[in-house]
Image (tube, rainbow, N blue to C red; front, side, top):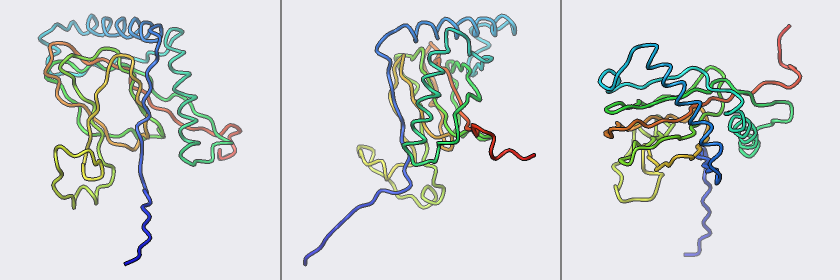
Length: 212
């Protein structure tokens, strides 16, 4: 039987992963992050026992030291939306959120997305425990998840899985669409998983869609 076959991937998303080869951005971001965490711990009089099982969220971390990272993320987010086929000529990206998270021992983070005008979200990892607390990304198609078959645990075929995990190291940057559900496995290490979390929005350059 003669046959012509073609496979067309549809409705996919991607993880855009980067790693700066120089340490200056990582070092400057860690200084800002550590100062914010220390201020939080002092403000609420926390200790090693009281933070067990907890996630600490810092205030906004944007300053002169972290601005190079934020600028890179803004520009790369714009390029990603263009690459995905969005008509971006009359729009520009802007920073909605840029804060630190510290996932301490026994803490985890459930599957969630970032709504309220966010189009791009991501993580810049600062400190990663040796035991790894893997970020998890979840299939955004509820009907597929509901009707899913068992998958092979040794399979590299992502089509069959309802979520994936990925290894990360200090200095890794992951950018993806805000509608992609994500979370973190439980941290069983004595050390926290620290990262900068961010959300990127899109606004009209000329406010052409703004209502009078």
